Length: 367
Ligand code: ADP
Ligand code: MG
Image (cartoon, rainbow, N blue to C red):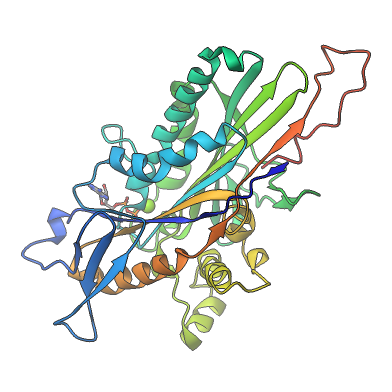
């Protein structure tokens, strides 16, 4: 592993969804975009005032899926082909557009299909460049859900909570998680669409499973050199559709009671604490206190590039959830990630049968 000395900050974007017609009969909107990086929201303490926020990116209600991808995700994708990790997550209350942003529809595909397509395009481009003639590439994916602090495989439904492990190099992985190699976007759709139904068939009302679970798609790009020095680079991309942030009530006694009653989403609760701890530069970051933060350990304050897209809704009825989500997002702006390249040397035993092959690094770079 070679360390990259440049530290990058987590990128925080806000996406405002358009008002939904059925909810918008003559209602006022409480949020308004100002420019490409800022917005304002009513001040609930004094309705004559507004509160202004600045972010890395502000995407207004007219923004297209392509704009979201190009501003928030595309800049990170190239890094994964040289063995770096990237992580994109959609945060925000239920109904604000997280799944639309991540998954989208067949007419308006979201980040997930665009990212897969882009990786294939970049692999093709690299393969055509004579400078990469001695490299081979493979792309695979896994798909999981965290629901009530249990990890479920969505690709191979086992109905069983999968353990999360850490290897000697502090790489986090899930030993029994299914992983599928894909060679084109059609391959991906064929496997992913039925798997995503395992999550999205539930009704989209506030208490449904889909609003209380975190779905995590993992794309793994492996790049191997076929000639000395036989470098092997593994880049991982996590694409995460988080549980609705309305579950993230975490203030005072109410927060504690909610947690005890099981009404709070532990992973989202700890996610907030991890963000706070990183922002305050605390020595102990409570990654281990939830499944989500354990899995994202190298994507938050760790070794990956990251972008958090906070989805918000414009309607007055969503005011409090929008305000809370914006405050959470503005705290996350201070997290610093230190990217590094996951690179090892792996001599192929087939080409040199007389030589002892180096130890496999698959487990070490797993997940
Ligand atoms: P969440 O996953 O955060 O609960 P959804 O992605 O399901 O929210 O969005 C709620 C509704 O709003 C859906 O009907 C979705 O199609 C619609 N929607 C969300 N974002 C947009 C957008 N940018 N443009 C058009 N419709 C959107
Ligand atoms: Mg959703």
